[in-house]
Amino acid sequence: MMWTREELKGKAKAVLSRSYWKALLVSFVAAVLSGKGGNVSYRVFNQATGRSDFDNMAKGLDPKVIMAILGVTGIIVLLAIAFGIALQLFLAYPLRVGAARFFISLTAKDTEINKLGYAFKTGRYGNVIKVMFITNLIVFLWTLLFIIPGIVKGYAYSMVPYILADNPQIDYKRAMELSEQMTMGEKANIWVLDLSFIGWYLLGLLACGIGMVFVHPYVDATKAELYITLRKRALREGLFTYEELNEKM
Image (tube, rainbow, N blue to C red; front, side):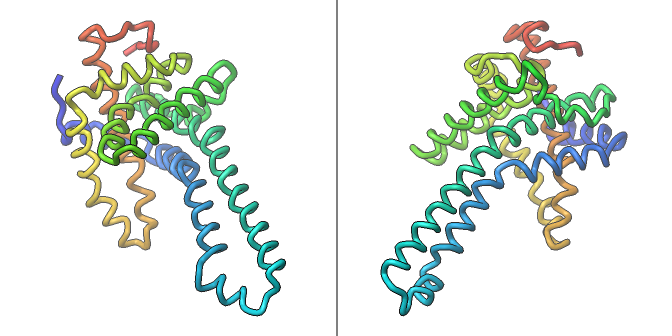
């Protein structure tokens, strides 16, 4: 089953026309709470240890005072990093899966915003965190080795949140395997799909960056349409069964 960017975006626009403001809220919450922890800790570290500021502050101070300041700064940085990791694990990952569930459901005209909390329910939460953590850890380790292979792996496992949205109990190995199979031969096309949103983000920047918030639902809805298309193809090719992904469409 072939797909085009125009086709996916057209379907996304049709879906958003029915419930744009709910989609905006879901995208906004998921975006704000995803990936911000590392940025916070990075800013804290820079602000606390910037060379010029530190040199000015250190002039005339007793070495013991300087060591105490460095010690407190180190603790603050570690706490910020720990907070960022905890935010990702226990809040951002489940919300990302919940957002995927919401946008998949939009195609069936189900606009219930409580889908955002889908992964927090008993029996789903622990496995969702586990699968998302292992997936992102593997992508991170590949990125440490070489940047390009890391990007490739990121695209290979990009369907994992959507797979979890269909079946939050799926094993991490199976989720990653199925995502790789779904994206086989499609990574370059998905990359070009991502690039096609750059113009929208640039327009969003013209409004002091605020306009970028309104682009997120469009991107999320398009990615959900991509997953649905790849899921149908995988089902037709026998890569999984109806029961495995609770497929009802």
